[in-house]
Amino acid sequence: MPILDINPVNPLVDGRQSLRAMEIRRGVVRHFSQTGMALIAELPLASGRRADLIGMDRKGRFTIVEIKSSVEDFRSDNKWPDYHGFCDAFYFATLPDVPADIFPQNQGFIIADNYGAEIIRSGEITALAGATRKALTLRFARAAAARLERVLQHHDVNGLVMPDGISSISGD
Image (cartoon, rainbow, N blue to C red; front, side, top):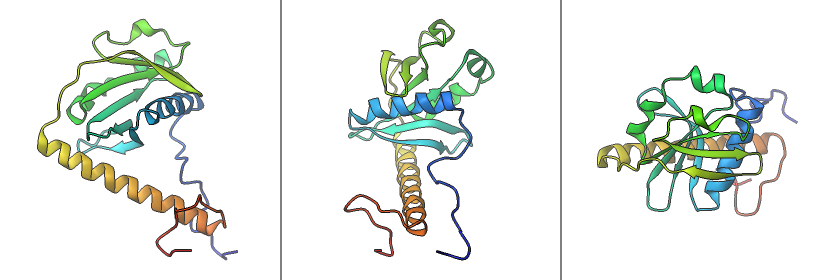
């Protein structure tokens, strides 16, 4: 056991989200993962905003999902239009007990819970500019690689075992 624990916190939990938001996130991730989409939570964008969830499909198209866990959460946030410049598709996602009629009718809409999600309405699909797509793809890949390494180091430090085929750079 190390004298100093350099990574005492679970790298998969950052503490910014409520339990309700985490339930939505889990359901949306489960839904989109079944379609082959790779997702990253809380990805900082070039604008300085942070996408709640961003996914890249097999064709390199990006979807941003803005999680809203309550009416108050939706009403207190007016930054969501800024995300449109960083995705091909945009959705709001919420729990079944949040009234659907508060969300703009021209935006994608998902109902989710801890176990899955259902797309209720698809929003407008707008293709990203080539330079924006390339920059976002690099940001997405670098963030994913850095997060994977943090998870692997956390497992190494804590003596945990990862599934076959996944190991840290040290090869342990």
